[in-house]
Image (cartoon, rainbow over all chains, first blue to last red; front, side):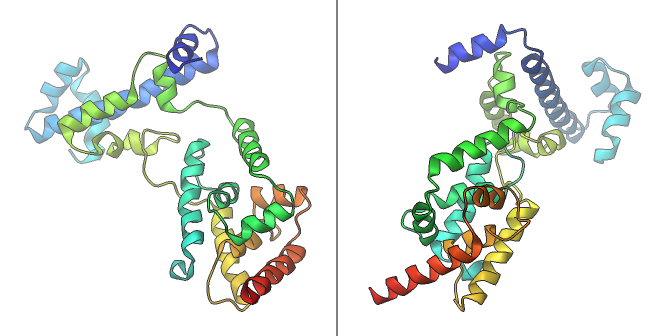
Amino acid sequence: MTDATKVAAAASSRDPAVGLAAVASLRGLLESLEELQVSNARAQGWSWQQIADVLRVTRQAVHKKYRRFGL
Amino acid sequence: MFERFTTKARDTVIGAQEVARRFDADTVGSEHLLAALYEQRGNLALTVLEALSVPREEVEAELERIRTGGVATPSDAEALATLGIDLDEVRRQVEEAFGPGALDRTRSGMSRRWGWRKGHLPFGRDAKKVLNLALREALLLKHNYIGCEHILLGMLHEGTGAAGVFLRSRGVRQDATRIIVEELLKRRRAG
């Protein structure tokens, strides 16, 4: 099996182990990308409110989550 | 201590990282050191292992068994590929905007067990113990260097993890191995 067909087979599988692992990895990737973007926005002088608006969450949520990063 | 290692022993330690990564481990274990010994051609430990009929294939099969005995989670890259996401491509894009290693330096990136982090894997307790015991073996044999054969002898101490358990199950004993090593060295010196 080529890599491409292996991927296709996995994607169409209803095996929870495959599907759930993909969700977990996706969540991790999401966290990494959000962290990068939030810190970049702060570095460029964006307010927590501005960041929250674009992320479509409350200002409190984003501030609470990233305050500990010292941004 | 590392400066006393021979080139092959050093390369074994470095190679063990690569083996651990290949088998999706989160730390380097003694079993990865054992597999790495097979990658250094002509080392004394390998001569011993061959003489005692421990082929590379069986060691690799053991690593495979250990891997699937744990939680058989696919790596993040494989898991994301099932959704059509190419992690290497994501990394490339992110690094283009934020610089080399940007994705891997995020907190989420650094905490991932099989993560997108491609860097250094830490040595587990048993692998560290094996390396310390290798030094002890060298001192015991009055050698002023630490070679692959001392690493092998280090693995054969009781309670040093997966490599020792596997080797003992194959009938490899520390005292007998030590005698073979000394004999081989004697022959090598005699030319």
